[in-house]
Image (cartoon, rainbow, N blue to C red; front, side, top):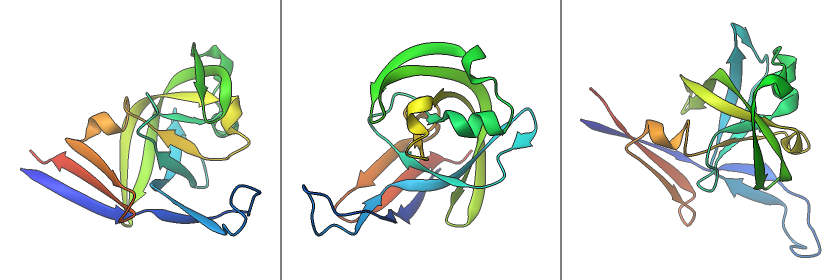
Length: 152
């Protein structure tokens, strides 16, 4: 049996720029997130963008450090993305996300990237998030996310 979970994009404030002088907000497919490592949970939630262009789940290094992860001891991979180029270091964590007020958690081999510290948000990518579902649909026109999950 397939269950469909649908929820709206989240509206974030945005400053006008030369390119978008009247912009005051952006809407993104995002979830409230927290991370757990060896029983220690990051005390506050942060947002993670559901990112179809991300190969894996990646979070700001500063968040990992605050829960005791020795970031640079993880396995490394050179990456290029929204935060520029850098080295991402991977660790096994438990990710907690809130969907429609319900908390879900999953084990994840996630990366930590210094370049995301300046943005303060994580990325939920293909390996670690998308692969948990039968399908993930990001409907930019309707500003909704649709997750299809198989219920045993």
